[in-house]
Image (cartoon, rainbow, N blue to C red; front, side, top):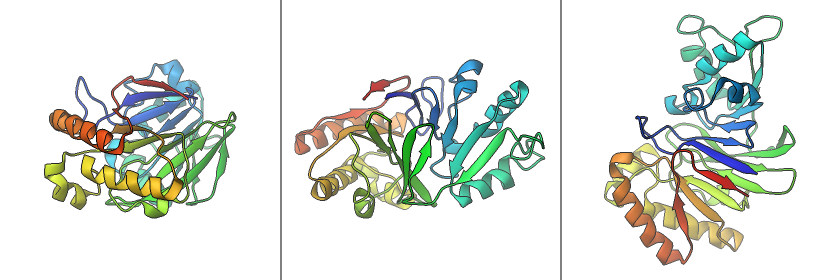
Length: 256
């Protein structure tokens, strides 16, 4: 399993991109950084997009990707909750801001939306995908993705503390989890449904208690203006857990 990080932050700039992952060139997770990061051919190679929730930085590129695929006659499946579908059709693919590619062209729409059921596994392009609800300001799911060879990754999407129930349903080799703010901004993180390094430590201790081990950990969705502070605090957490934690970055490549 090859995992490409098209973006690893919560802010877009010349040097940072919205958190967005691609697995083996065919399954994308979230879509805030697809069109600017992938060639047209790489976009056409995608077979599925897993959407964690409907916040802008996670769904932004769906219309642009759809336009590119429409021009070439390709189609792609989108997976998400009913809330995601409602936001896409109301605010982005509403026929006014952008064409509704869920209905266009009529004979074979460019986008096909598949509503996911939490805790119910799906077979997608040969991978087993399990959506699991996580804590955030709006309804959000993380996805555990297991390859045909048995390699597994769990990406939480945006999430705050309180993942004890989630940890009972996943057992990945690699955990990609958000850490958005430093410890001194914990109150703000809690209000927005995000993690700090200290909150991450609590969640990792809960994971270890539930599963008896700690997976490989990569953090994403960092605020770049506060990244130095976040990285230093993550080093402290890693030392406390006696377990490495790797901050993600744009164009990072991982292989399981």
